[in-house]
Length: 454
Image 1 (cartoon, one colour):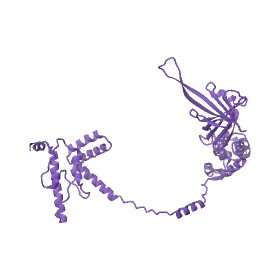
Image 2: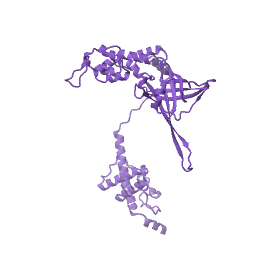
Image 3: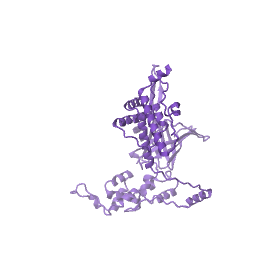
Image 4: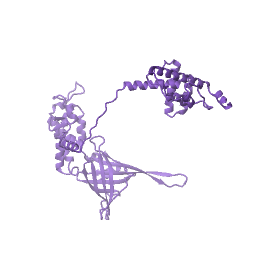
């Protein structure tokens, strides 16, 4: 037919050569398998067309197409039955190896969705060798065979169903176990009390005889003439910050500053109601920390009295102007102050940016009378600071009070210098009904030390 002759004449020559080579290889493999097995049945072949499948020795039939097939169409006859890994292919030349590398890169680009780059590389690989897809699949099959043969199969896990009785027995056994405390290094201090934790493991390796050393060897060290007992009496007159600064001088100063008689009065002065609920709670803390009063003072939560907790808050308010095409915004800044007293009182002040903290802090006393100043009570429960009954002093008509719950945090360890809002309520004095207030613009309180408060 004229149409058929036209299609054959337009078929690409390289596709015709490729199919002829493929048919010759199939015939040679069929002959080899029939001679080895002694079987007359031909091997199953999945050709690209039904006419080739019905008559394997007939010339290849051409499909009526006017475009060159893609790499997937070219590789489909080979993928009908891929050669096994046991078949050793002929050694590839440098040109074919380069073509396989380009084909491999094209596959990676196609997997990543970069179709333009993949199509360009596929065309380059097929121009270099028309059998590049077959060589690529042979290389991949060999790699898979080597990997599967070299890797050992993991042992099969066997699971046994546990009955309900065994579960109860296991739970009872776990409940009867006595879980001991983790090992904590403990060293007896040179004076009174014990030293635990990291410092205990450090000073245990230090020599017993320690002394102050001069930076200049020609100068003497008069402090070495003082007995340790007299030196500790002087240290007891300092606050905790000065004590720790002295302890950083050398090993001798650190050992003296760890004496329990220095830290015990500080702990008993600070950790009392409202810092703790009852006196018995302090005795439990002393037992928990094994009379290491320094660790109690540093690690146990405490509200500080030697300064003020300040929160700097901001919010944006829309403004008005003469120009309707311009949006005006105002950044509003206000401050919150909290000063805690050892007797359980707390001073709270809400002030705008007209008064700076340097102006406000000297005014925080019971005699202050200004809008936004309240006096209330507080107590500490774990790390939660409860502030209650915040009332405006001197007001005749008191209908509402305020209450807060703040989370006490320490950044870094031992400073306890941050308070985060958890709850903030307005309480009707007559009915006792609490109404939560918005915390959108509120920020954490940060501690600022005041020398006059210490």
